[in-house]
Length: 171
Image (tube, rainbow, N blue to C red; front, side, top):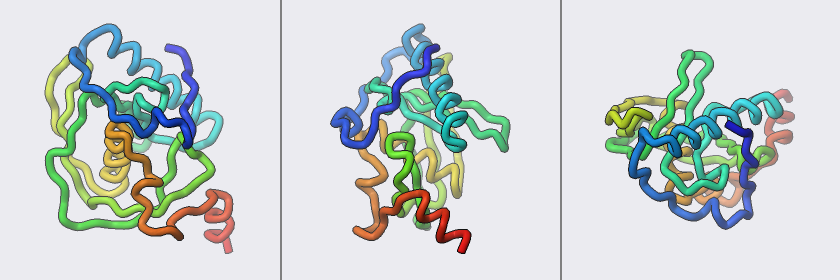
């Protein structure tokens, strides 16, 4: 489970859709999940933030996401995730991404979603979430579809450097 290089904004692979994983319980899938977990841990140690990562961000066009939510004590790999329902209610927030760690993007997301996915044993599961976790899953599933947060910016002024937003928040 090596730490992998994270592809950065400008790499055309980030805009390519991922392929469905044929066997969620395969050793190849387990290896990708382990690499995602190691890369997430490394990124968090170096940057101090991050809750999830998608396989395309490490150059693998596979429909796999790895989520780690410390507050909930949760680690969850999602293989072939699909959003099966979305709330009508939307909200806006500043979003960030490992592929452009110094850039923040103002996006609009659904307040709540339900995601269907396979676990590493190949069992189909559902996960209904709202708020920041809903936004997180929408962000990561977008990666699997070749869509980046910058593609979802609410308008041309919906981009900011992280340091500037942090400075303004402390004013």
